[in-house]
Image 1: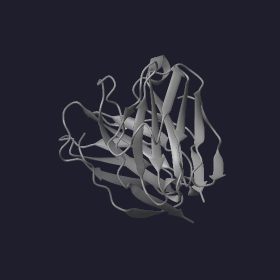
Image 2: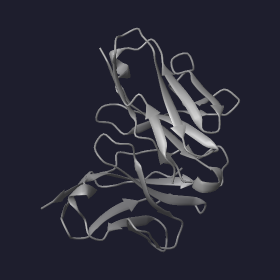
Image 3: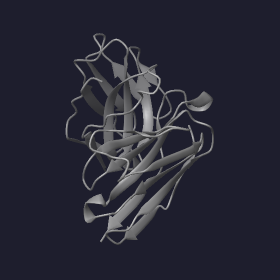
Image 4: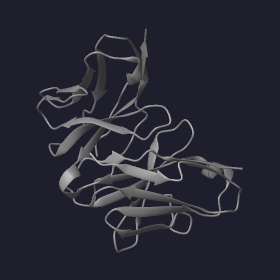
Length: 116
Length: 113
C-alpha cells in the first residue's frame, strides 16, 4: 500500500474564508482523487487531480469552489473556497496507480472541516 | 460501473465469522468487486478485491458466485476492532483515467462481546 498524509487533520473555519488541504504520498502515483464525506453520508468524488493539467470535476463540483493543484506525482492540494456551514465535511485524498499500487485506490486519513 | 446492494446493518459476535453479502446482478465481465471498510471518522481502508476467483488475504476472504452476480466478504474471526461500515464496490479496471470509486451506503457491522 502507500503512506498518505493530509494536512491539516482538522480545522474550524469562519464562513467566507478559504482553506487549503494538502495531500502527500510516499511514492509516485498515477492518480490522485479528492472525495467529500458529509456528516452521516457516504463518500462522494469531487474531482480527479491531474498532474500538469486542470483537474477533472464531477457533476455538481466546480473549479471556482474547489480549486485543485497537482504539481508533481506525490502531492496535491484541494482548496475549499468561500466556505459556508454546508461545506462542513470530511475531505479525503486517495491515490492509485504506479508500480507499487497498481489500480487499487488507497485513502488518506481525511481532513475534518467545521465551518461556523 | 454496476450498482451494488448491501444490507444496511449486521451484528456479529466477537470470535465468530462475519459474512457480509453483496449483490451486483448487473456486473460486467471487465468489472472487479472491491471491498473497503471505514472505521468511525477514519479514511476508508482497502480490504480485498477479485474478478471471478475466490480471494484470500491476511484480512479477509472474498467469495464470488460462479455467475458473479453476488459476493460475500468473510472476516474469519471478528474482533471489536472490525466494527465499521463495509463498502462493496464494483469497478472497471484497466480503464486508464476512469478509475474512480462510487461508494454506496455500505453495511454497518457491529461486533459485540
